[in-house]
Length: 300
Image (cartoon, rainbow, N blue to C red; front, side, top):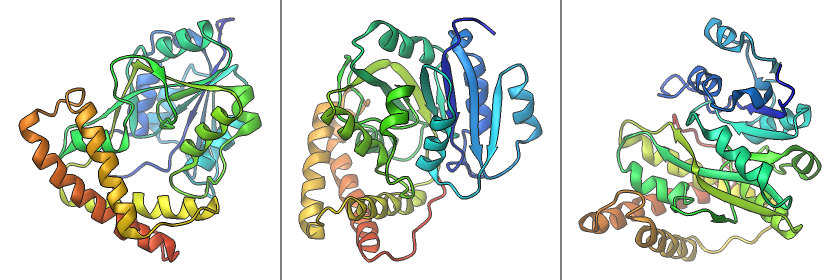
């Protein structure tokens, strides 16, 4: 092993599914191709199952630990892997998000050469082609600017953190499907740390192939948002007021990021109409989450 190896890579597996166009094996293969692969100290996979033959083959030659835990959700899987990590840095990998081959190299440029107050670096993710994928990119993955800057949020499939900091502060509310990453970013910033966005860190995320899959996906997001707000003890605004606020945010993001996302001006009215659909589905999920009804399921 290279004496410079100091990066632990933590793979979650809750995002697996038979209809995913990006699989855990695809993500592992992308990590084997990294231009700075010599910096990888270990892989840690947290999963409720045993590895497949293909996954075992991809782990050959890599110091890897496969931890079987069937009782952990997405962020809890990540947190468990983080606590097991021995590297100076920990990279968070999702089973359905494939990093570009220079992802690690670009992340290390920021954390090795930057301000030690930078607790994590995150990047730019786009979805696989699919119905309204550009609009959903702006709605869910709003770090799409072409210039580097500090940010207030990150997505946990496209981030590398200083291990000591995240082990000490950690994700909270990991039993909730979404929300813990935004919450961690807020707590890091409140503690005097910086969250850095670097657009050269690029990843490709799985996406729906059919329009009909989107409604369930947006309902899941609304449900998780409401449950995490309850977990944090926050007050819930009326669904109407929340919907108005969401449309304002989405409209502002659309205008600011439409060209970055490849949305021509002539498409903007259709995009806004789609965001009405997004907002209604989110409200349906939020209403379910506020009542703590059974959690909905989406297949992407």
